[in-house]
Length: 366
Length: 253
Ligand SMILES: Cc1cc2nc3c(=O)[nH]c(=O)nc-3n(C[C@H](O)[C@H](O)[C@H](O)COP(=O)(O)OP(=O)(O)OC[C@H]3O[C@@H](n4cnc5c(N)ncnc54)[C@H](O)[C@@H]3O)c2cc1C
Image (tube, each protein chain N blue to C red):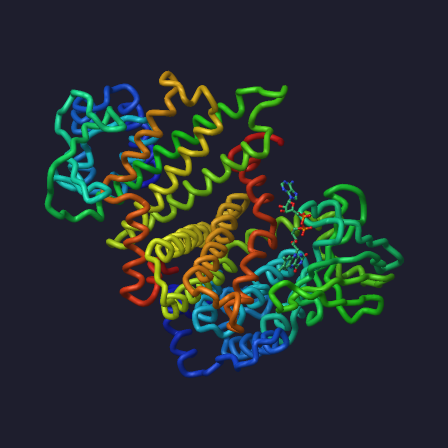
């Protein structure tokens, strides 16, 4: 069992440890360096046990409530130790393995991720299937005691660094015909081709599957469980991960306050109010999770608030640091551009509003 | 108070607010229900419940003076207003039902609790508008389909819900001065967003005096200015951030 009874106690202990152990990143801001830094931070935090709190013992954790992971991630983000987007990927991938992998597979694999020894990726989107994920066509066909996969994924974050992939495939028609696998990325027939991104940090790639053989015991859940797996994953992304991201955005508002010579109280206040709002909402979501509530479509509200706040913040940055994004080589440029993806990844802004209209406002079909 | 007690209280209050005439009669009815004792003993239940319900039902009572005191209240633009006790004559403001009167001057008063209260009122007003617009979208048919089937309409209503849910989260954790300021700003902004989108979704009918929408729109606009408008409070928050040199993290896990 966890040695900590409150989140505040845990935070104090983590802070004390981080004050003693310097995990600050070096000056290199390349993606290679960011991923190496992420591995270093995870490994150090795992070896010191911090990374193990909030995860069940059967996958190498030390137990305790999920809120401990939110607190740890907040500290990591606040101190700028790791890029929060890639740091938080464990929050999506680990619960998926815990819920859908065989107990042996989860026990073997999860520690490799938590300890920074491996990166994993999430192969959902395809060239023909983005928002309409259920139309995906990458096929898996049974052959003896394994499956053969053919098709293509796209926008797969960190695929070029990943040792494994949580992959959605089609095994039959319809939503019930989607099946998930946990695939080793070094399997023959997998080709990863990195894509250039707009913000200069080439975080995602195309992944091609050409007669890739996947053992049957690497299926996550049963045939047809893939859609449910994808839906189950969203609330994880929108609880702990969001708390991390919000903490990161506060550091950027602080940085803006520090650097601006053209302050505008109305704009600063509006950016702050938007951040405070998503922080309060995320706080309520964490509370509900802690009380045992199953998170569902109401997390689309969190998603809209976060994406809106993030874009508003970086527009304010551009306004109050005139010319910096456009004319200088400062890191603001990449971050400014990256904010534009906030209404695209993880379900677009429009898809979130569709969900809110249908599921929360009960407006029927459109 | 446990959740069942709060629910019972909510239903009693809702019934009172929808059956008793707003103003002095409702003031009396609320006193008889034990409003002042509730406010003294359980302010964290009393304020959100009573003020949100005023908004949702479109009723009004002078309960704000129990929270802030019967004193001149600051209004947007450096103005001062008075909440008329027992006044029955219609006011001259945009929301004629509210007994608000302009005063030449006033003296600074503590406003945090009042901002939370008016914030909950604004939230309830926003919810009332969303309920009206949602109902209309489902009932009204154009081009052979309910309005609710058009994505532009759905997205306006979704946007409204997001604003209201965000404001509610901020109100629910507001404690200190800055937290209450932000809560009032979020609630004012959300109610004005609701007013804009819901008015659009209701089309011509929402512009008639018979339809209840305009009463809520007026109330939202007037309450937004009371104890500081969303715009002013947001600017004040920005000034505070600049003075501190950092953004306060108000809620902790
Ligand atoms: C930085 C980044 C990282 C990503 N990482 C991953 C990853 O690791 N793994 C992965 O699987 N995917 C990843 N994605 C992909 C992401 O999930 C998709 O881009 C997203 O789901 C949208 O799909 P799409 O790009 O095909 O756009 P489309 O679905 O083609 O949408 C284009 C536009 O049309 C709108 N639209 C579509 N359908 C509707 C509708 N029904 N109603 C109204 N508007 C609609 C959309 O909102 C959008 O504005 C990533 C994307 C980005 C930008």
